[in-house]
Image 1 (spheres, one colour):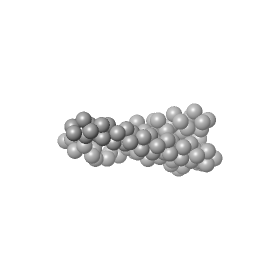
Image 2 (cartoon, helix red, strand yellow; image 1 turned 135 degrees about the vertical axis):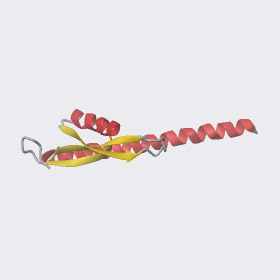
Image 3 (spheres, helix red, strand yellow; image 1 turned 180 degrees about the horizontal axis):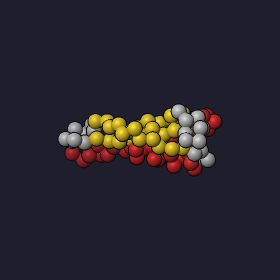
Image 4 (cartoon, one colour; image 1 turned 30 degrees about the vertical axis):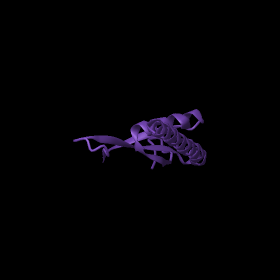
Length: 103
């Protein structure tokens, strides 16, 4: 893909708008310009709410910034996975406490 000024771009993320905005912020904090593209595509809402949809967007960066962007994305994904694991462990601790109190 190319921008209006002819700069070649590459997709670094395709997903929900809120997460793309967060990643865009992290990239810009790291000195990488990025832009969101909305192809007006929708994905089904897994909560099964009638008519529920999420906007799906694409986050792009310049081809010259791709390697640095990839490192920032890897760090984000690693921190997200660690956070999810920590949250899951907190939930398990809470469940164990509840089970002990019931005994």
